[in-house]
Length: 284
Ligand SMILES: [Zn+2]
Ligand SMILES: [Zn+2]
Image 1 (cartoon, rainbow, N blue to C red):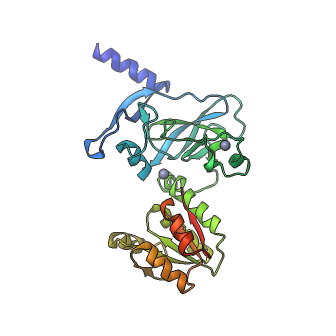
Image 2 (image 1 turned 45 degrees about the horizontal axis):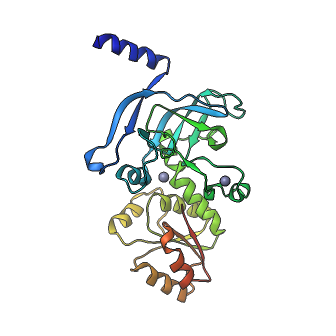
Image 3 (image 1 turned 120 degrees about the horizontal axis):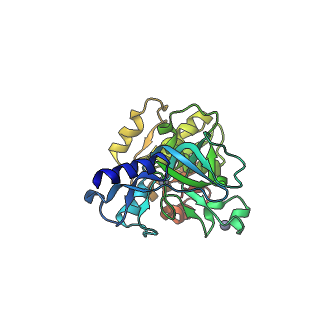
């Protein structure tokens, strides 16, 4: 009996009707190992959707927030993961821009309403009706995932390993977006507060663009982390002021930094209060 069940499962897998996925059925502390590897039905692409064979999927702090219940559980079982790189495996009706075999990236933004004032201005991540990959809909901790054609990123012509590209789909995008919002240019000074994956990519881009970057880090572990990667030019120096708003006041007083990128909305009011001449920018 067991054997015939196995044969059936293998046959289903062969026809891509069943896939392996890491599923979350109940939120709990990560130490309790709440993710479980299971055989689940493969997703089928709807109209204007593509199905992607996942090659790599990064792990984000947001995934841990969902697992541990800091963010509400929207569906169960849930496949997490929103830093996805893979190749198109199947296209739904009406797909125009992708073909089977095309390399693609899938990020946090699964879909938006496409008609509210934010969507119409290209600020879709402010859309009140946006849906998230690996939260509202299943994500990339699986063999296959589906995505709206309009929200998948073509990775054609990019010569990088999938596992190197995957984190670009979340901290890479968020960091680049914040850097663009500062409108910083060559020779300008840029302050980064905290040094997580987002700042890592902002720093790389800032160095490449000739923007002078300063990093403020409280934790010595993160400081080591920032210095360890030799591919990155050493930031000019590290500011170790604490607490944050005092450091901002000092920087403002000396007219030292013009742009800030902060990893958290909570500090926005403090920045605008203390540094009203600066251009505060924060990430998602
Ligand atoms: Zn993320
Ligand atoms: Zn919208």
